[in-house]
Length: 143
Image (cartoon, rainbow, N blue to C red):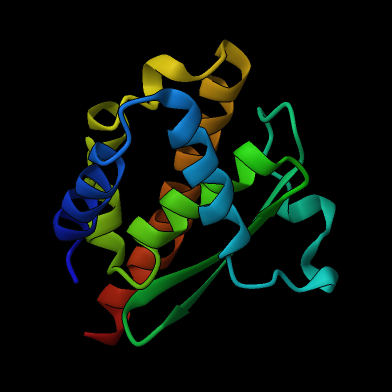
């Protein structure tokens, strides 16, 4: 499924909730659904700088696509990173780099985050795009 389609799904999913407390509850549930993050990967190198809470992000490159795994020690943050993993994982590097991630604004997440969480969100996106940038040359070499 393309990034835009996943974003559309997320917008529809969050449109069900009129109240932001319900959206936060949904974020928490999404965070709980993240696949387990290997404890051995909880190293300094995988910590995202710029997040108030601790967020670990790792990526692998297989068959021309980037796959992300992530975890956080904060439940809301874990939900936020789960949205990004759901949207970007399994996508080609060039699609990740081109993604606008408009769903963040469409679901109202951007204006309902504290400034520190908003900075953390930007740091997560930046790190995911950096991984895509790193893997993009590998794609060119294999083609």
